[in-house]
Amino acid sequence: MTVPATFAARTAPAGATAADPMRPMPLAVLASRQETHDVVTLDIARPPGLDGAAFAPGQFNMLYVFGVGEVAISLSGDPGDPGPLRHTVRGVGAVSRAIVGLGPGGTIGVRGPFGSAWPMAEAEGRDVVVVAGGLGLAPLRPALYRLMATRERYRRVILLYGTRSPADILFGEELGTWRDRGLEVEVTIDHAAGAWDGNVGVVTRLIPRVAFDAGDAIGLVCGPEVMMRFTLDALVERGIDPSRLYLSAERNMKCAVAQCGHCQFGPDFVCKDGPVFRHDRVRHRLTVREI
Amino acid sequence: MAVENLDRIICEHPVFHGLGDQPCLLISGCAKNVRFEKGEYLCREGESADWFYLLRAGSVALEMAAPAKGVLTFQSLHEGELVGVSWLLPPYRWGYDARATERVRAVAMDARCLRAKIEDDHELGFQLMMRFTPILVERLHGTRLQLLDVYAPAARA
Image (cartoon, rainbow over all chains, first blue to last red; front, side, top):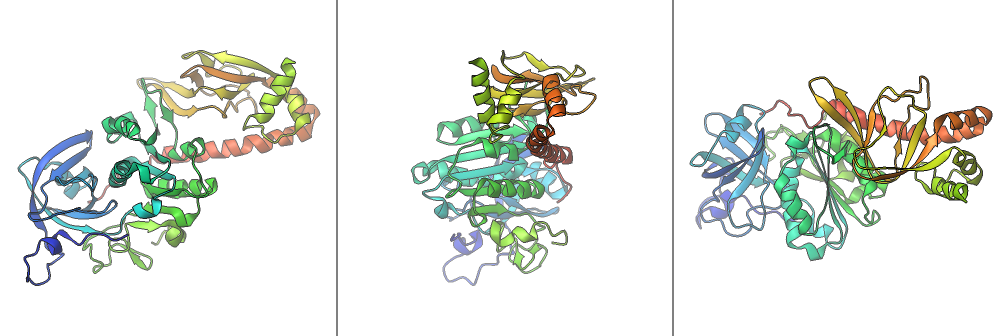
């Protein structure tokens, strides 16, 4: 899938020398929304002069908190929305906690968008099975928005979402509206207490329970790598060919332009060749510990 | 007539699908249709595992109560699935509560009756084990992933 050029390249003045993809663009934080106890979605102002689609579903930006550091975060907003850039972040380290702590009026450095995208064109005319685990729903949300916006181009669209507990369900208020917009949504959690009467168990248990044309369906998977390995195996067992399965890999991305080597994934760099990979091209690497 | 119907229902249930007419007929002699309303319990922890259930409709939560934590659900089961493996091996005692989270229709299998038939017919026992073992393995794999707590935050940047 063709992906947009970086913000720096698209907003450089005519005749300027090549824009530096390593230079963060300082942008204003417009809003911050608490999604769960440790996950926040930030709305960040678009780069001045940026027209058209800001990114393709599945891509990421490098977000830089000045004086703290930089980290790769997937875009989680609607790719068709001309409004702010949207990132959903869990505060787990020094940089991500600093990002989560930013509020309206704050400034953040942004480089991107980088990386490969979910195969939206290839999914047209097929059943689409989207399997998300935990925070992995965030990188898939742009693809879900695209699927809903052009719903008539696809056959069944199924979202299977597994997470830790009811309190960890991401975009909980939106899930119901997605059902109204033509998605079949099933949620399961690993640990339940109290009044939860929904599904309990790993997300792979949902796969045999939903109807789709496995011989022609396409699968998009994002979540912790252990979850993805078992999910991809379950989808293959169900009958989806590995050449029609895609995953979003996560590695230690630093430069985001395939120069530093930190995110090397066998012969690929996750920042440039990924994060979205076709399963049959990387499946043998997923169980190699050294990679 | 009722036995014939149960025979067919058992043979068509995913757990026993493909078992063959004769074994289905044999085990249907240990079966009866049951119904549980939402909130009713199919079994309680510590009780003798004298029955197991083939779910035909509805959902069941497998639960354990823990001091200061309340009731914890560790798995939900649905139409086409099996409630109960404790009947297979001594001490034949339920290790959890099973609660209907919506109206449940099921085939209840009398475990004592079935164990007696297996003692007399080891081939039947083998055929049943070939159906129960994949279920046990699948649930073991799922439990491993739940124990790994793969969605827990990992330390990183």
